[in-house]
Length: 426
Image (cartoon, rainbow, N blue to C red; front, side, top):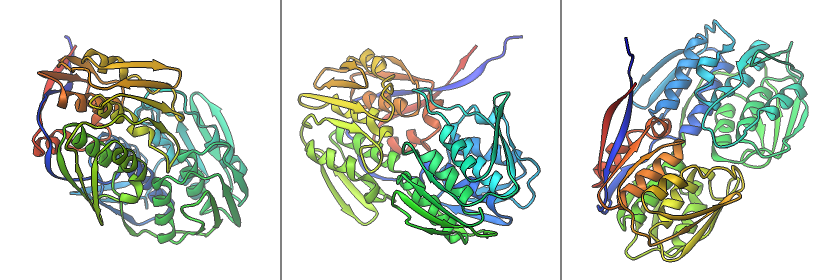
């Protein structure tokens, strides 16, 4: 018997100007960091404005396998870690998503032991976990690596001073969530200041943690004996917002985004305005308009508050419609240009170098069959399809589904011709 695997694709017909209003979902990356904090306490943690995408499903299955009670209704997610049955995050879950390692810090802090598989996720360069392990060791945990698993144990974590050699969102979240239950005082320096880290810190304070310096690179933490469950709203997804901002501009559209946090989008907003886009912000609402042809603008993806690496592929798609050449550099993941050959299949004029690419705007794009290689690369292909002549077929959109909730429905409501088609891969 031959088994088949269902694997969706998108069919996009180009040439439509996007216009209308779109509501931005809660942030995928923030949700993945917030959900494991339920392991720090018994009782029901409630997260509102929760997105519904593949990565959230993966984290839900992982937490459920450990005994966390889960209930999602609309965008309200309830997590109850009162009856944890396992301190293990098995390979079958972790291989699908690097964020699974976020369970490590809370498990060690509350239960004194954890067994977590070494992680997987999008393949665009090495992202080692050594900072996570060094930080936990500094807090007093014993770490053993064997059989592809991280085994961590301790009596009780003890406050310390730990400096992150590089700014790492994942390590910052893991060590912060461990330190809040450690005895004594912990100082963390060179902490990542991405909104996801701040969101976790704010939630922990609401739960009873004592943290000073939130939003800065230095956090001072006084350990507490226990935390209590609360209700917290997930911050808006800045990457989804940036994607719709750029899609609106490259189709010379007029789109209003609701449920955004403009302070998280400053680098993208500035670059778009520099390219000739008109952006008006009113509280949690943003209107993006593009009347003429954008001017080419160089960007460099860098740690927050710099231009986000998760938006550089979308910027490349936008620059396909610009006057002149744009140089796109990524200082975080210098090999993150796997989307370039696929854009070239549509007719894009792009040259790649070591850690950068140069997009020459104005080339005529023609629909073709292309393949997704990672989450953000996927959406850059969709965006290019919006302005290409004819039909573009984007395969393997399961990558895209990891981080976007109902993208085809949201784009369709703005006037895009986009259809999800189920295919069978044997």
